Image 1: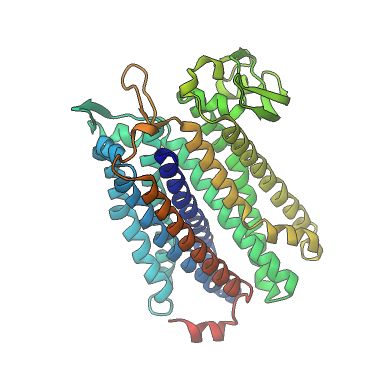
Image 2 (image 1 turned 90 degrees about the vertical axis):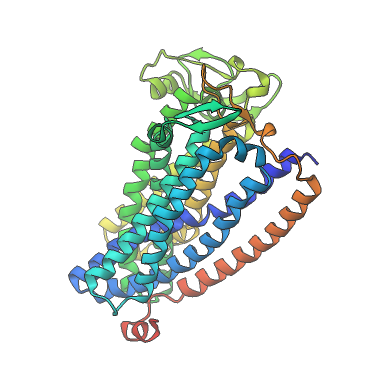
Length: 452
């Protein structure tokens, strides 16, 4: 089998599996900041119990996320040695900053948060979970910086066949960093909201500590509706505009725009036929809306796939399908949390068992949306591992970045090994989350007894 495909497949497996856990950790950490604040400032036993309960879920998620993230970074030196040599001067800086400036902050204060309850003052304990949330959010920033530089490289020069850093600020705040970072963080907050809402809904259905569970559900619905709405406007829309300006081939692929046109339609539905030439069967769209959303002008001209050489066109079916399903899920999150808030307003939420079950089964959907967004970004970037900069840099193709000395057989063996280990880790993670989550928050006396 092709070594490039296998190397990409392995990275997709390891990165995709790891990316399950950081969004949940970030979102849950910020919700715990709110819960701990309520428990502290109101001296409220329900919020105290909820904080202890969801802290266990955070600890499990964080542990598995760390274990899977370490493995992922080693692949840059094994499977992608040519790439690492070319961009090591730039790519290594944000990864080092993530470890030194963010990971140690997050992990250090997590230990204080989990084991310092009743051993430090309430303000210090609340500050510890705040620093966990801040650390996780900063950690995501540096990872997004590294990935965004691949998408829209800046602050570098090519010297002796290598990309060398000349402007750290320009590299960090390259044209896509801020938009991609905001989109990632708000998506992570949505993951946390739906985890809390789903667990709370399940406990309400089963009648297990229904009063505190109902309060957690109410918090998660309000929080989830706000962040889901922000993820559509302005965050998601702003990111799409950035892609339209800086990565026009990706934009054309995700939007199903195969012919350059003015008054470009926003496609709601279509069946991709990759061709050649590519075409979209049974398209359903609104004429001119894409031009207006991308450039603020309904008559704006948008380049289609026909403007780009065939060997520089990303895979069309996967980018289109992953993007549109991500958007569909985003709209669902706004709708279902809005419905939940209406039922809450009329004091009917506790009786709406079908709606509560929807929240239970929706727990993994924001994580799925994050995975689809990652597919959209990374597959849409192909065939480039480092995107070209017109007039400055011709780009580096993924096929030119793999390690020449790593054989297909070696990659296959490692794929099989990692897949087996990750499936086992996933099974253990789900078992632990179910075992802890299905029990609900312990009475405060018992919770204090089991606190380390």
